[in-house]
Image 1 (cartoon, helix red, strand yellow):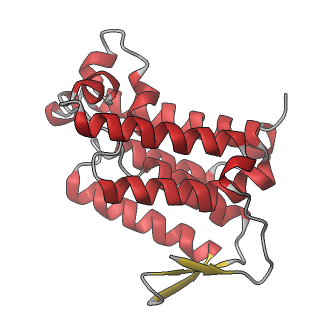
Image 2: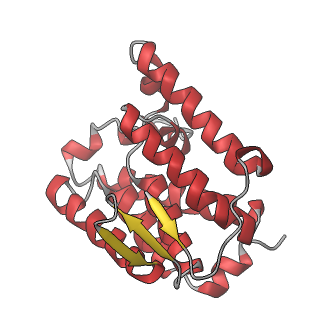
Length: 207
């Protein structure tokens, strides 16, 4: 993925932003371990509504750090570095951390509640997915609406505003095709990132 800007935005080195660096390294480490440990880590970290209702509430957060495929791992880390790095530079670590935790936990809670409606959602054990990409990309698009991003090897160029709606559309279509109950975290993250008020987002950065 290549991008060009009407106004250049400083992109920090991986080591220059503590929060993004830690997030990327934790995702890589957890994903690699999960690929080789026979499923042990994923079994303890996955989003599992049935187990969350039995008190394993850490699963509301830990599931996002495990990507099951190399391609998904690369996509998540690139999204964090590219879009998350620019957001952290503009927002600051505190605001970005609170924003991410809010939507990730909210998505996990909604998915857990969905388990009471859908047997499939109740018994699921999810790791990774699009939630990180959704919330980071859409928040970036709102912050830089006039920036342009070129996708799919130059076949599609979108402004930040259009990228937001494109991401919302793709996420919604996937949710419809898979299951809105299973894909609830991505829906919450995408629509929350798109429509939370600017004033609320600004307040997240305050002490």
